Amino acid sequence: MTSLSVVLFCSVLVMFLIPAIHMGIPTAKNGPCTPGELVWVDCNLCTCNPQGMPNPVCAKMWCQPTPALKEAKAIEDARAKQLELEKQKEEVREEEALNEEIKEIEIKEEEEMKAEE
Image (cartoon, rainbow, N blue to C red; front, side, top):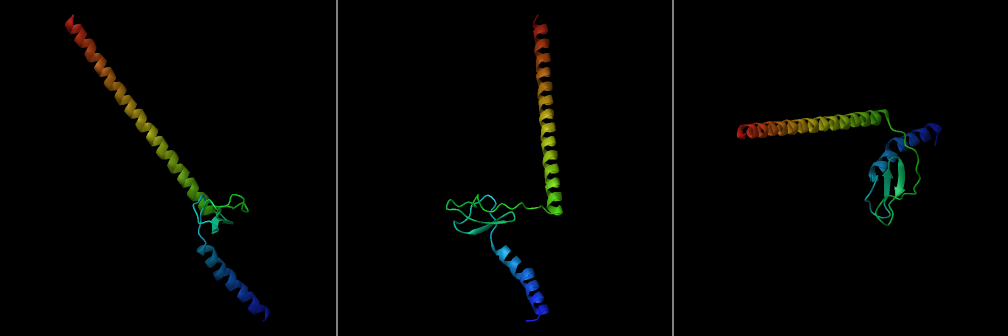
């Protein structure tokens, strides 16, 4: 084989075979999985332990998140904060409405007591 053939062969291997293998292995970040099965946990290839969970002692290589993943996470976090704020505002509105109803009832009771006197 010439050096060009070797380079082409390696390029094909890297471009097609390795991603195909990676895609064929399930991803199980927190389980469950089949005992003995290979699973991807982030960018780490781990075996599934007898309890049906990814092996906690598999190689924990730090996985650098992609910029798109960081952006998606930031959007998700912002949306969660927005939903929480909206929920809190709604709770405050409900509490204010309840307090208003209580005031109206108290005023009516006071008026009734004055009318009875």
